Length: 428
Image (tube, rainbow, N blue to C red; front, side):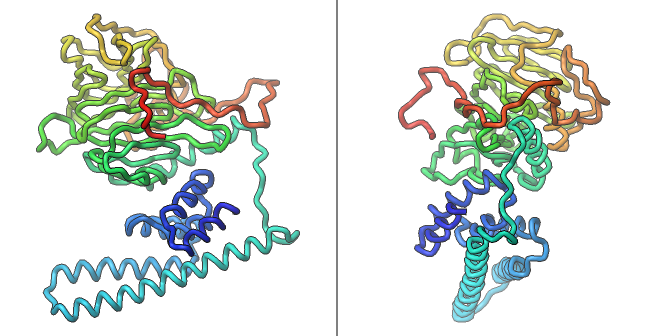
């Protein structure tokens, strides 16, 4: 509440980017914080975020009259602009219309700001009242909290990233950091934010943090071939604990590293890249200098000790330079050098369970949330405990008699990178 009060002061002072940063941080902790969403209306970075903020307010509070009125005004303004583009109007009429619309918009914003101010003031005045609602301090242990938050993130995935086009990235769930080619620091900061891949230089998704119950995932979409006129696309999901150190705007070339430390939240998917090409299409790309041609679904992990490992969940993948096809139900290993790039040592293909960091079966829940057809998914050497068409439960029961800690453990470290990749100006 104190942070939101500070954000309100910054808004009143006209320091909108600083206020937005505080509000977004609050939403990382509590995505359903109505007061934070109401404040974001006054410091949204663009019209797209302003509209999404109104939708989230109405999701949380469907009877919110102010948000409904603002949504109607926004729809009218958007529709009016479209009509103006189709019709030729006199310059004087256009100027008058802009002045009137701007004046009306400022009035609406002022009303929204006043409502948000009164709401926050009311909450502040009633914090000490015995009859007023107070914040409930979570009493769940860290494990139970992670099992609660992961399904929430999956349930909101479709609404957050509904239409990601080739050449775009979308933040599924914080926390993640990006290094931008444009100098902007507000790209992919709030769940549902999207950005052009050409504007991003690198990105990192952080593993589950038991201190504030956050974890990062990012959705990327690229073309399925090196041909620019290809109409098909390839889906790539960056799970928690991954640093994508290089990628081009079509995802034809990607270099990444995955955290070799298992997550403290077993409900999150293992650290790596989930790559999917739908239907009968084939996706051509290079992962850490290893050319591949994928038809189906593939999960990849890489670290210096265990090399580049790929698990073919569905379909097949061709390792182009090695003239080797790896089928569904198999996994392969390519040795890497100190910079995590593929080495010329012959590839190994196995049918036994691989050395995987994390629970592979949690990918079923992620695939289901992505609306992928998981009925035919197979994991080499691992028996799926439920029917193949349904994802396993996201919760993991504690061993009988175990005493789970009631205090949050230490925050996990960031994804390790090779020494030669660490630079003083790396993204924070």
